Image 1: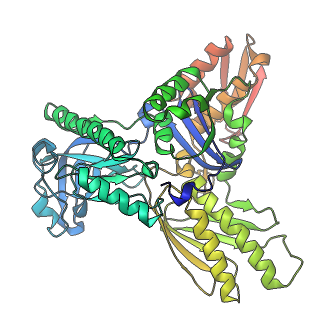
Image 2 (image 1 turned 60 degrees about the vertical axis):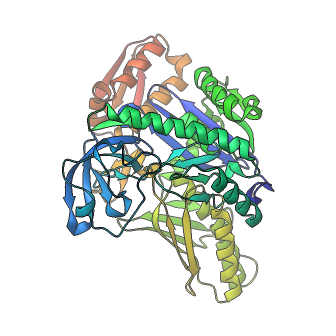
Image 3 (image 1 turned 90 degrees about the horizontal axis):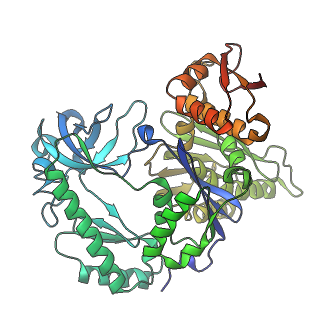
Length: 504
């Protein structure tokens, strides 16, 4: 039996772009961009999902946490509640299937000691002032299931809403689950039968046992397992989506995706298409414009109203305003119409920008309680499409709605920007890597007019230093593709994000 989320599937398109410097993916629903994922080259890739053999550097009873050396620049952060009792060296015996269970009663100093080695998995990417958050509760995602080798439980995706189907899945997996382990049924598992789950469970168990064996011969700190590349990961995690097409920028990536789908979802293989258009996929489908828009605070609504998004240190404040919209009826009707439109757009922006933590949405005040309920219901319904776990509290008489949304990877704004030197970090500008890649896109877009012609590119000094230093691979690639000499001139009068291209 399919879950209710699939009874009226949205028309969706997945775009996947990759080049030597980054991979990007975008999900479009009904021709509107709702998710954007970006993964930089390996040296700066995210770590969420990676499994490490780490060494406890320090136990801090005052905050009931430990700092774990996993080989990154900053030690990882491990809460007491994320520690499996009786962890042993290398996580071999104690993290083998069927042994320890999660507890949160014991203090951190009774669970871990400095110098102890253990297996941990990254659950949150590092922030500028925080290290990677890790857990000893390892998860291995598959097509239909997520294996929980250290916890005895059966869970079902919240997006499978039919209670009869949820009960069937729980009973089926409980019957076939080996002792000591657990699973979560993914949305794609709705309607599947026992033999499909058993095959995947066997594969995931074998993968886990292989990781345990591999970890025995490694010295901490070390990476035991890396998450799949973005192209495969996004296809795997969105397989329950009703795709019209999966557009891929290059044949090599497309072939890897087809191989993955052939094993897990053969009927989707024919949906994979390689783009042969002169412009890149993100430009063709308007995603580049959406990315630029996510770097702005204000988002205009079709009616003329707007929402303003203001991330702060503690939370994200989202304000709804009528703007230029005056309506044709009374004030309450105008406010209701604006709030309903804003509810849909706020939910989309939360997904698009990958906003997380505590979010406070300030809808326009409404006098009629039924109108407040209607806006809250519309907002909750839109958020149900979100893959990230969130919780919505009720709407106050002043129109305030509090939302908590789980954070994993860095959101789009942090990934693409840096602290602004012009306003002493009160705002943000594009990062040096993003500016260099913008320059690359501009030059390659005009390649027919630039090929074989010497070029002078004028940039801000910090961008110039990046192009001959950390981002020199971008410059080398452009020179090779255009088959020309490129001279970089530094101009301190230019804004960081501006550049000028002249033929030599």
